[in-house]
Amino acid sequence: MELQLNWLNHQLDKIWPYVDAAASELIRNNVEPILEEYRPAILSSLKFSKLTLGTVAPQFTGISIIEEESDSGGVTMELEMQWDGNPNIVLDINTRVGVALPIQVKDIGFTGVFRLIFKPLVPEFPGFGAISYSLREKKQLDFRLKVIGGELSSIPGLSDAIEETIKDAIEDSITWPVRKIIPILPGDYEDLELKPEGILDVKLVQAKELSNKDVIGKSDPFAVVFIRPLRDRTKTSKVINNQLNPVWNEHFEFVVEDASTQHLTIRVFDDEGISAAELIGCAQVALKDLEPGKVKDVWLKLVKDLNIQRDNKYRGEVCYSLTSVLI
Image 1 (cartoon, rainbow, N blue to C red):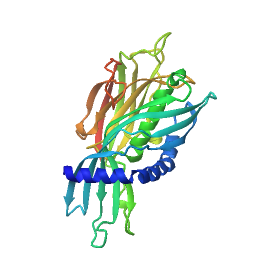
Image 2: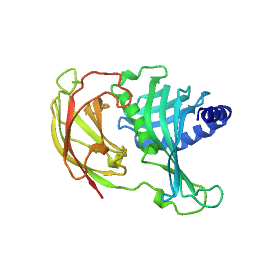
Image 3: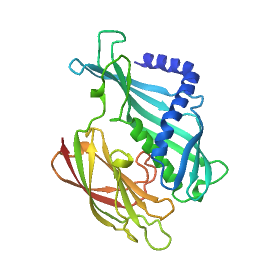
Image 4: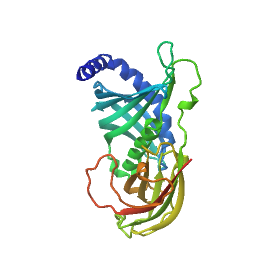
């Protein structure tokens, strides 16, 4: 296995300049519209002004065949990848208050597992009708934002809003159970598309001991809840003014596509009026921990970031009641 990975990484290093050019163009054409879709309300535009992936190729650290069943008619392969790149990525943003900022995305560190599904298997060359690909697991995604010639902290909440936009775009464009399907041979591949398997009923109950983001008075908290961060599938609670122990008691419903891998995510913010809302904290619960048809009440501690647990500061807790129903 190690010999195979060494050979694969050596080949990728050799062709990386060509892969970089093609991938950079693909990312620009496909990701920029998604960033625009997830653009936070404080921004009037969000586009790439520069985009190359740099000179450092990713490294494959693991490879496995996880499924090869005759009745499934397909083969699933997973590739674990690590990338500490030196890309040149600059976002041009314009805020609704008339401020234009070029923001550089720096110090990217990524580790994840990509899933390739070769399905259906067919007797003619190349042996399969289509390839589906997806980011099966995002183990680490770390990056830093830097304003070229300025300070991002000059606009409160802007850094959090842009980071969330980038992560949400990745989450919903390529992260499993979302998958991209590439037809290789002519055929109908509708059965490979993502389909709902259940409904999750969520009662957002309350939060307690929230961190105070306001200098005068107390935070005005509201919650954003989602399984997938699509705008039409994201639910936002009412704002509770001047309260660190808000009670919402609001019900939401969400479509579930893969209960074995998906999570319910909640982000609690302090409402800042026309300025960007400041993130108080976020939390996640795995849907696989729920028993269909049974109510589960949970209290979850809020953290600053779901991917990078470097900040142990207590930010408060949130309570909700969950019920999943299979379709």
